[in-house]
Image (cartoon, rainbow, N blue to C red; front, side, top):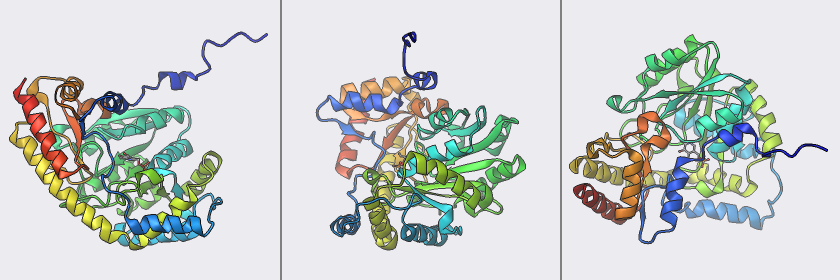
Length: 388
Ligand code: PLP
């Protein structure tokens, strides 16, 4: 008889830490009157014409699978959109419609990583990058963007982390959690490193539409970068479609067709009705996006100024919908600050250390919440600081 296993769970999964964001949501969920600046999603409902397109697709009986890579019509529209907005040309066979940007990132890692390959992860960053590298059998190598550089990563920092095992780097600008946006020159400097060491770049551009002052540059549009970039984007943030679970990836033919193998076995295809919604969003959604961006800009200015006025130094984020103020002046760790703020003033924020070592001393505050709530949250945070 086979000996009983002490656990059925793989060592890799046992050793994976649960997301640090969840702990705060769970704490906040049991409390009343909490203002949450914790959630990383738009407070807008998906525009009506987009919802209507999905409803119509259901009424018309589009309830079966689509091709693995997604509806051809949608992939064609994605290529038009990416060409017009980000100035990179792809053919529909170089596009895969994914289950959010999340599955695009996971599929990318599983497609490119051999056991022991290293992937440079520029931190602070979205919490899934390192775990997806680990789950694919790779080794995440965190490199810390620093507050003294407004969380802009320097090429020299990346170069110092490269070994003969480095296969790729994953970057995200505009960034979650810092809101930092790199300009073209700064991106070009990273691209030079990728070319020099023959690395792939997974460029998570999910916040590309949410920029406020400077314009956005896609990594794939830089000279000789299309061939080594896996461009990740999606509908969640720009079109307020987090619940639809719809994203996409664009990559050169060889990489896209390899990714399609992983995608087809793991996911089959993205939700059919979400794909019809996505088609409408790309065709006619830009006006709504612009309205949302205008509203986020006002809120960004308000929250960043408020933090600086109360003595929590905060750089002006160029994109996304997060402010990342320093709380070092309070002498508390980011975990202590977030936990006490929640318990004493009922405001939920996310401690910066969950996004990487250099996030310590900061908190992530999402301003994708109403101006009224933001004003009240700022009053409460000020009260909390004054009480220390
Ligand atoms: N990438 C970043 C940087 C994010 O912040 C998020 C969500 O918060 C995602 C990817 C996942 O997005 P999606 O909802 O498209 O899976």
